[in-house]
Each structure stands twice: as C-alpha cells, then as structure tokens.
Image 1 (spheres, rainbow, N blue to C red):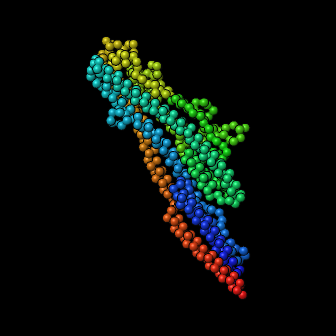
Image 2 (cartoon, one colour; image 1 turned 45 degrees about the horizontal axis):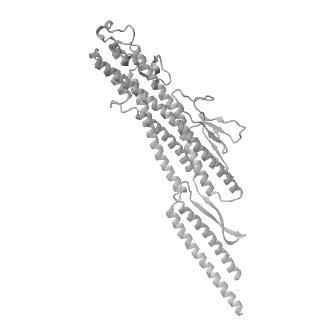
Image 3 (tube, rainbow, N blue to C red; image 1 turned 45 degrees about the vertical axis):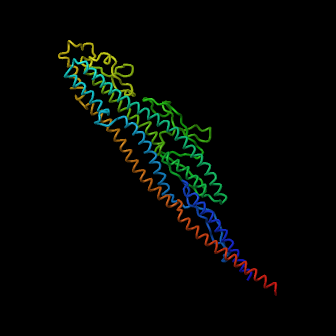
Length: 472
C-alpha cells in the first residue's frame, strides 16, 4: 500500500515540477508578446517510464515552432521592400527637380519657353527687351539642366553614403550570426535548449535579409551557411568593407580602379586578400544602392548629357553659339558631366543682339536681310527641324524618369502589401497569441491545483497509515 502511495506521490510531484516549468514558459511568452522576433516557446514534456511502468512526467527542453517556408518568404519580401524603398526615395528626389509638366516648371517647359522667346523676337528683332528675354529664357533652360544634373550627382553621393552605412549594418548582423551560431552549436552538442539563441540569430538573419537577397541552409548541429546571388558565399567569420567617397558625374565603378571604392569581402584569415564582390551584390537595400549608384543614375546623367550636347550643337549649327561648356568651352559633342556645366555663352549675355545676329564673325547686322536670318534658322531648324525636336527630347527624358519613379512607387506599394501578409502569417504561426497563452495559463493552474490535492491526499493517507501502525 505504501509503495502505491509513494508512486502516486512521486507522479504528482513530477507533475507539479512540470507544470511549474510550463507556467514559467507561458509567463515568458506573455511578457515578450510585443518583442520583435520573439517566437512562442513550449515546454517539452514526456511520460517518464521504466519498462511498462509510468513514474510521472519528464521535463524536457524548451522548443519553438516556426514555419521556415513562411519565414523564408517573409525575409525575401523584406529584401524586396528594402530595395524598392531606397529606389523610390532616390528617384522621387530627382523627379522633384523636374517640376510639373505643363505648369511652366519642367525641362520641357523651359525648352518651350526659349522657343517662345525666339518667336516673339522674330516679330520684333530689334527690340532689346525681346533680345534680353531670349537670353533670360536660355539661362532658365541651362539652370534647369544644371539643377537636374546636380541633383542626380547629389543623389549618387547620398547613395554612396548609404552604401557605407549599410555595409556597417551588415557586419554587425554577421557578427551576431557568428556568435549565436557558435552558441547554438555548443547548446546542440550539450543537448541544451536552443530556442532563445535561435530567436537571436533569426533577428540578425532578418537584418541581413533586408540588405541582400540571401539564402540560408541550417544544419542539425546548429551551423548555418549563407549564400547570396551570383555564386556569392558569405562565411560567418568574414566581413564586408568599403570606403567613403565624394562622387562626380564622371565617377564610374570598374574592378581594380579607384574611381569608386569597391565593396570587399574580407576573410578572417589576414593572409587571404579581400575579394571585390561589388558586381555580385544584388537584391535588398545594398544591391539596389549599388544598382542606383553604378547603373541607374549614371544612365540618367548620360541621357541628360546627350540632350545638352544636342541642344548646344543644334544652335551652333545655325550660326548661334548660344550655349557653352564650363569655362566657355565650345560644345562639339556629348561628354560625361556636360549637363552640370552647360551655360549661356558669356558673349551672348554681354551682347544680347547676338541672339538676332548670330555669334559668327560674318554675322553682322547690316549683312543679315531683315535681321531675321539667324532667328528664322533657329526656329525652323533648331527647334523643329530634322529628327526629334528639342522639346520632344526634353519631354522624353522627363517622361522616362517620371515613369521610373511612378513604377518604383507602385512596386513598393505592392511589395509592402505582400510583406504585410507574410508577416501576419509568420506572426500567426510563431508569434505570441496572448489570449491563447492566458487560456493555457488557466489550464496549467487548474492542473497544478489538482496535483497539489493529490499530494495532500497521499500525505493524509501516509499519516493515517503511520497512526495505524503505531497503535498496533
């Protein structure tokens, strides 16, 4: 009889210990319900058996439940949102300099304003007011080109600064992944709980996922490998590095050149030279920043440079060198950075009659019948003659950049909505449901009381048995 009571008491005692451990886990869940990256923990319990005989409850490790497929999709969507965010912000800053087409503030409007100035001058070629108005309109157009070009260069420098900051953020996250992975491997080897460490590593991996498109392969021993796009492997003990720089319109990235600092991946072994991985970086915030710096924004500059060269040469071909490059240099063709340097010819500014008479030495007022030869040539050939008109070229640049900005905004909206859906699904599957945990707490408390009553009852029966033996 006493043996049976002893077994019952031991079973109840183990139940109390298991319930206390479970209550502690549930309490932690509720307390950390609002902590980003925290996943619901569960106290593993099993029946303690010897042969076919049960001897209570065995308390195991604390585990967590995470849908790795949903988690991978959520991290991938984070990379997309991060990339589209920096793209949208950068393009919006450039788009703001374009003004509103049709409102008199866009690049195309500035071209139309110059054309209107020449049309009015054609009617009054000897009017100093109209001559000065043409010079002013040319200045407005040159300034519009300069402002857009300078904004593009400014945004490239902003992007370069973000690259440096993002690289630092990646290194911090990598350091956490490395340290937590070492701790995880030790915990697995000693059969200790890994749930909390796994949460810490996941938080760092999520940060990395926002910076690049990455894939993770986790092994049963707690180790993990990180793979990027284009064959990029990122050892946990490696670190990225790059340098700050002030970029000019002519700055370009190319391997083994110093024009733009590369992004290097350095092994922990100092004997191994760092590897330039700039061209292998894609997706996420860092991948998009590199794309903007080295491809998207230089393409805008090149397009604006081409327009600037066409503008200048189409005027000069009619005998009017209305625009020059920096320092008054004659513009013979497109060159990188021309759009940030183009200006109204100083000679024309000083002598506004040149917009009527031309800038060539043979173009003197008495030799030009009706004083409109240059003006007619400009109106008939420069603005609307052969090929694509200047207004159309300007509008094409504005439209392309505006379309890119609008598309980036639309893509960001869609990607953010998708990310919200995935984040909700991930939270629903692994996040803390406070109502559910509170319900579980009540069940555990009821079980605790039941086991406590069993303990009380067995103690009472033991006492009664001892009294009986004492009286006999």
